[in-house]
Length: 558
Picture (cartoon, rainbow, N blue to C red):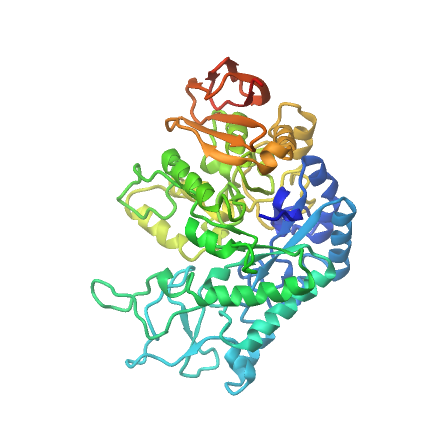
């Protein structure tokens, strides 16, 4: 594989509304991000990824774009974005933008015109369908946000329009060459502004099956069913993706393209990232994770029930991805993002918060691949805890609450489950210091609730903090062995996560204890040089002893 600047990066994902508020209106903003670039550089970050900053009604926190060429006023101005890009580059770092290409807001001028005039060229920018023979929806496909993918023409016409997500986020019609060109134009505008890459949101959904297809059900009724087979990974996606990326790279060949391929298995990951195909350089899949559902309470909905990690299945997913991509592309390595609860809450151990945060980071980020760190993760930041169901902004939550209450769960028990598992609980404000609003703002943040006592200011000053451990870890990641080495999973039971990194010149074993019990492990070689250690782990020749949630990275004697 040829090497590019983006093959050896550490990416830091920023949710702009929650990172840093420079004008004290309770909403994070562009100028607030610019002010924290030195903090990110000190941490060891080399690339910043921003969630969408385009003009938006904020139905889905920026993923519903009403103008791709404008910055949302709540976040700042175009001049402030230009200053951010320059500041990032002046610090020897890179910046990539989230790019929403599957759908727009219903407030986008294209959709407004499509609704206002069925004969407008913009009607064909979206997906319209006549009713079924009985006058109902065209099919029984389900939306990811609940209910059907079909909603009636807002102007009162007989047709339905297609939306895979919220009904206020209509899907674009990628069979229309004008749509393809329009989206290429938007991407080129931002690359010309100086951004270094794009994270392609939901690109796997650009192609849809024949709308006459219906998902078979037991009863044959038309209750909406989420049916990925009709709108994920269809062959035409490759053509759309290639044409889009090739056009950008023809003028800007070093543009980094990382795609959100949420349901991609290892073989699909290979297909999307094959060198020479002008598709993605890397992809982000949700298929890495594995939760243990054996303790689910079957008396109510399992949608937001907390689950520990299924370590063995997680290992299997990891080694499957590593094996498939070994000669093709780099995996993306991440524990959490804006679409899930924070790792410290999901998989961390409240009795060993610092140790578990460090051990989880070690087992992941030294693997072959590109780390993507979610803002605040470097502090061991936990989920915010809300007091009101409305704070989750999710139409599926009331259904879960009703199900839990019917099973006898109290309101506090139900809220505790939601706060432990829901993605919105992972979007709380960054905690910079110990002032009233954690230094995020002098005004009550747009998302607020109970938080654990931790902040960046204290952790930067504490040599034993999670933050300073991340600094050590990311420094180690930049060494040739961990930047370029191959991944080899070592055998161990579910208490441990163990692997070898080998670049034909050097090698190192990474051994992580994922339990509260002391564990022992026999190395494949006699240890000599400890590269990183925490939690009191020790070794003697080939024998490693690991107290609760400790880990060690060790190379052999030469």
